[in-house]
Amino acid sequence: MKIGIYGGSFNPPHLGHLAAARAAAALLELDRLVFVPAGVPPHKELPPGTPTRDQRLAMISIAADQLLMPEVTGVWDTELHREGRSYTADTLAEAARQWPGAELWLLMGTDMFLTVHQWREPEKILSLANVCAFGRSTADSEAVFAPQRDHLSRAYGAKITTVSIPDLVEISSTRLRELIGRGEGREFLPQAVYGYILREKLYGTNADLKRLSMEDLRCVSYSMVQARRLAHIRGTEETAARLALRWGADEDRMRRAAILHDCTKYLSHEEHLAICDQYGVALDPLERATDKLLHAKSGAALAKYVFGMDDVYDAVLYHTTARAGMSLEEKILYTADYMEPNRDFPEVEELRRLADSDLDKAVGMGARLAMEEMVQRDKELHHDTRGAYECYGKGI
Image (tube, rainbow, N blue to C red; front, side, top):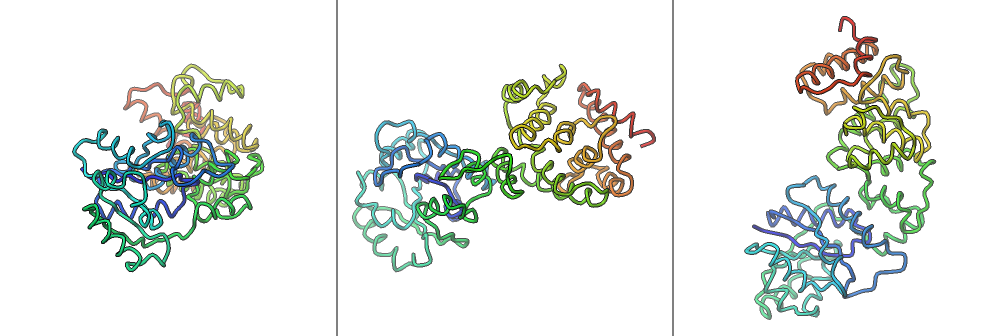
């Protein structure tokens, strides 16, 4: 098994880190690549205003998830729990115990590569792991790498490989923190990481979550879900916007509802209940017991009370069950969620046709399909879905 160890302060993790990880994983054909956020880096002091260890862990976890390689990438928080400075030799020794017999690869940028022989116990480092170095700027050519590679090979018997990064992002974390504090630099960050920064008010940001721009709302919402859910959320947004134009609803409102409709999808059962209890969202016994139903309720609560969007509350609240007597916005979000481009089931094309010709019938068809699914799975049907079918589904 080949395991890549990619350490750093990740303050914050940016697109350059992800490009390097992706290139190294492909070149080395890694079975696992673990990001290791440093507790106390040995070579530099963390600057004032640095996020807490838990916040840095959350950011690198979000960033790693954006690679959409869950079977390969992960985060290892060993250095965050270690007392004192985070020495690479200690981390690699622990990695050797954690994954006995694995072929370890230490991943690093040019600046680290050129000084690795000056680190604590370089002979131990280079005996425990091979080194994969990647350039962080266009100036990091073979002429820069070759002398150090030759020296480490001769002095320590090290196995070294270098990798060029096709989609190189030239930005330092220091420079990026300065940009973020001025309201700039978002183009260097995964949207979800930027959203987390806004949520936590890091690096001098002070976003009012109740007055976010559309793009900032996307980032914040994306930071709350797993990356594999983003295609669905984007698909639902674009479908809801198109249906809004078709049926005369407010496009901006429908986009915001779609952006937030699954924002609590990955919370725990207890977290759903806590949000609903906090904001006084009434739950029936089936809703209280079922996460698939709960996420619509907790998501609606956050949409209204955290993000200040009273006008999308009901659309988010009923996007899973539907109900009798739905508003236009509720019908659009329910249908968009059901038929967005990533959905693939036998009757989806018929549902899409209906959504453009008779929105009520589309809702009725969605309710019928939901009823049939619950029967097949021997699950209890929510009374609102039955009500939606009785209201809109006759003859569908």
